[in-house]
Image (cartoon, rainbow, N blue to C red; front, side):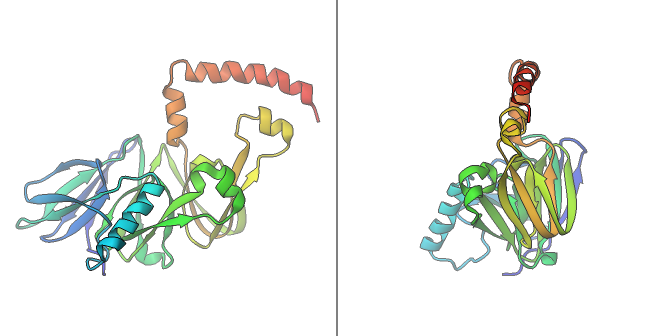
Length: 258
């Protein structure tokens, strides 16, 4: 199924809103609860599946919905269709502050691999499927990076990142990233999880025990504020506690000099 050709604007800078303009009978799919506003003539319906194959059997739709549950997403997706005359607009935002990234999937033949809560919206015709990382280390320790989503199609898709988003182009290179900060990568990139340095660094470094390792040639997108860090920062005395613990741990770490 060919994706619908949608027009869009991204409004704002720090807490962004995606505004999609639909021609009559055009449809955009989005995560449940992402809608901010919609103009008269837009009708929405919750469906199992992304609608990329309308003739999919009920078992196929149940399987697709089940894979979404595995990734931690809602069982249903919301389809917004312009049933009126002339162009109509519908807008979406992510559940926490950050940046919205537009992706033309037609330029990524193998699709885009996205962290499990990174997908925001896409033109109807975009196929969302589960992506298992086959690296044993990622499965056991990667957390955010073990079960991801793959977006495939020939239309526009929109991914959300917490805080500021950084795009890196790797040319047969390696990049180490906090496991929660990986937003998306092209399928030509190999994703694995490695130990974060020596024993002292793992225990006292404050960067976690494991880090994501990205290798190959292709694009990688990184977020500065994953939801885990945002929740930690918003907790009462979260930052001060972190600094106090850091000073204590820093003192203890001197006991483990290399």
